[in-house]
Image (cartoon, rainbow, N blue to C red; front, side, top):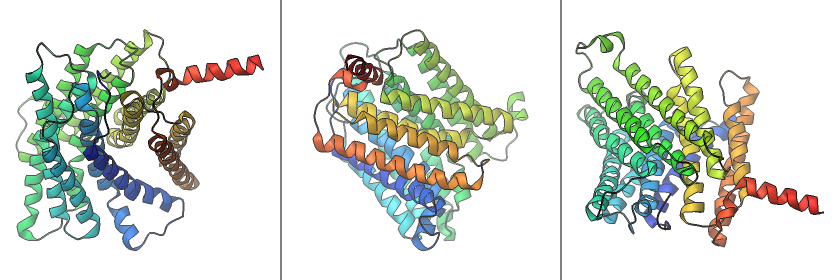
Length: 416
């Protein structure tokens, strides 16, 4: 997976801290309100209003791109750190300032333009780090799926974020606040970012035990990134122009972007399943979260094909599974540090139950219990990572496998 042990970078910690605060402020407050533990009024109402924005803009990009790109990417490239750490710190500060302005002031346009600056700088730092590693390498470098996912996700941000900033700039002369519907249009590029970086992490979770068809994975990832980005940018810059081909005449650009993302996710999941099926896959905590990510994306396929919608919510929910998959993989196998497996498994179980109960088709009481289980999952995660960082003790390779732990318990029972 990585050639050297990953380190704990301070900027990466700030990225993860921002993502955690945004998740607690957005998803956490929403869950507690569903459980009836918090009122829907005052400042809490503001957090509920910006729930989707906080989860998409301030969890996905800071965690999947900024956080893992800063903490994990240099180790995967056999480097000490990103090539421009100060610029990376400025990018993180821009995102923090944007989040504070969004929920604490009425400067919505300024907040989102500041976020655009931070996301653009973060993507440029990661791409510069990857290209610099190619220049320093003596021979041809073979990138892992994680590196490819980070690079292509950064490319998507590099081409789409300036378009979003240009769109937001139209609100400045008129003195208007940008509406949530205007920001919802950027959900398509962010879904592609989730798809690329998420699958990169999920592939990395089994890279040590599974022989992956890397060329096929890269082709699917690159094709999904290229076609989705071009179609989305064209739909924003030229919304009223006639379509030139028979294919685009049949489908609007928004549906085509979703269909390309759906096809890409199907192919990537198929490659993962085929590669994992050929070997005896050892069950680890990151693999559990990777399977959860694939299950949610699969549910999005079914909903997208049956109802014409559903992939966006599935990828947004799957982003949490990809983030937790990456955190446990980075902390355990990347940093070679211990974390309590029982709490990690309980975190996965409570999160999965909460996701299952959050389906809108269920009865109203299930929404309340969904908020309760989301709260329990957050507490399990905080306790797990808290114990891991406080004790900060090294872990051997066998301690990450759940199957070996279960077999040791079974042997102990037999001996007794």
